[in-house]
Length: 82
Picture 1 (cartoon, rainbow, N blue to C red):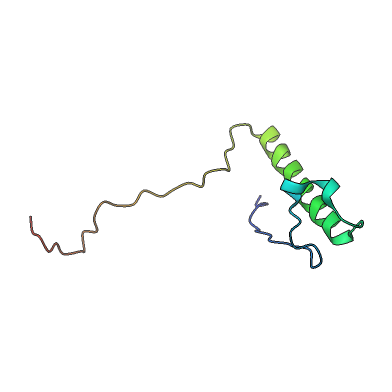
Picture 2: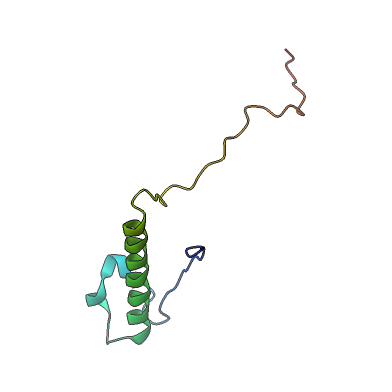
């Protein structure tokens, strides 16, 4: 099952400086519906991450798997010579 393959960069048109992880729910000005929705999206993503880690504690999504890079390409000619 593939769930977390989407990147979301959302901002409120009125309150461009509002950042849910930093500012929290209390920083929403004037009961702005878009800022509240951004906070709800962020809160739901945190809940999803918590549930995934609860299901599989060994799951580590912080670091992406890195494919080993070959030291040298055998097709590349050496200018120095060996």
